[in-house]
Image 1: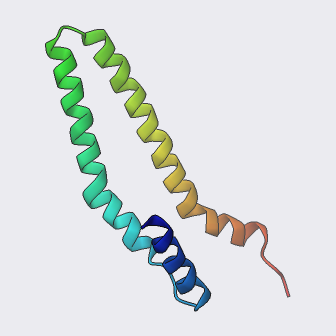
Image 2 (image 1 turned 30 degrees about the vertical axis):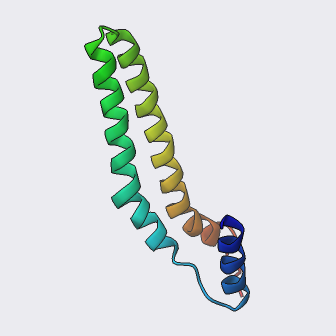
Image 3 (image 1 turned 90 degrees about the vertical axis):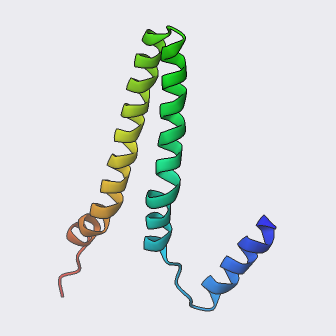
Length: 92
């Protein structure tokens, strides 16, 4: 099933069709990310109820740092095209 999906995407890419990356990112941010954060929150609550507060704080800190890295990557992708245009602009 996955190989069929990849072949379909490859066929559309060769045909000149564009992939809606903004739609994919929007879907991830609106549907997948909240579910993952809710699961992470439930795990933290379950651990803290068992008295493992220090582990919860450590895991929370790691999760926050991970989110910061992901946000940094998103900002880099958003700003990257502008940086490339500025650095490699052809002056005719």
